[in-house]
Amino acid sequence: KLQIPEAAAFCCLSAVILLSVSPTAVEWSAEMPKSVVGLSGSCVVIPCTFSYPAKGKTYTEFTGIWYKGLYEFTVYHTDTSKISDTFKGRTSLTGDLRQNNCSLKISSLSSSDTGPFIFRIEIKDLDNFSYVQNKTSVTVKETPEIPTVSVEEEMTSGKPVTATCAVSHSCPSDLPRVTWNHDGTHSSLSQPQNPGQLKLTSYTLAFTPSREDHNKHLSCSAEFEGKTVTDYKTLKVKCKSTIGSIKNCSLNGSFWNSSVLLGCVECSSINVPCMTTLFNGIRRQTSTY
Image (tube, rainbow, N blue to C red; front, side, top):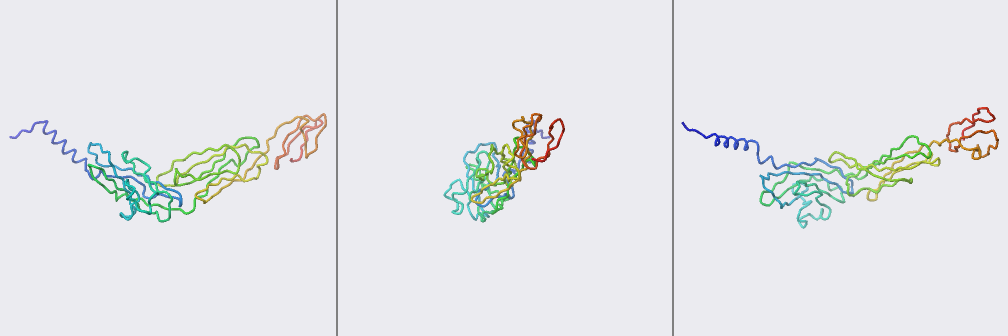
């Protein structure tokens, strides 16, 4: 009867297990969105990561290639001389192939840049592989989306407020020029979005409204390659009421010089509720002023 040593049996069993769980074909894979949205004249980034069967070895020489259609145009090539004329000077990789990042940036986007786009990797001393099962198309929008301005519905004169302008764009490295029609302190913050969607950046304006701002428009404009879109909100500013000294009190432009006037409310904005004063010891209601 043939006897198989335990060590040999274990080795054979291990080999069978390794073969059953490590199919080489599965190790060539890529992840990228099926579609992305870009603005005409701006740029767009196709996020992309890839994997390959390293087999425990380290590889350092990679050639990354992007094609449009079934090898119709060479959109990007590590050897830039091989890029098709229609894409020359407009494409680059935003990541590092050695870090498995194959993200593609296309600048000066036009209506003909719809794809589909396919990535191919060539690894020296290993193999080459085209990820034809992973294609990305680009939807090119001719007109930017209108920004969205948010601010408090009512505010008080002299009390600081913050307004926000949410702007959609397709390229973090080519942000639109955003302007406000009001003085204040500016800041911005990019919001995380799902892959393939337009990026969203929130621009804020911190300012102190005055009574002169009442019923005026607070507008935010975003300029994309000569195309400008604007949104606005109408400010509703309430007058700040304070008790002033006798010398500063006035009503409809006439000073109250009575020595028995105990105090008054200083406010000259429109649409201010009636105020109550004490005059000659009698509580009286003045008209709106």
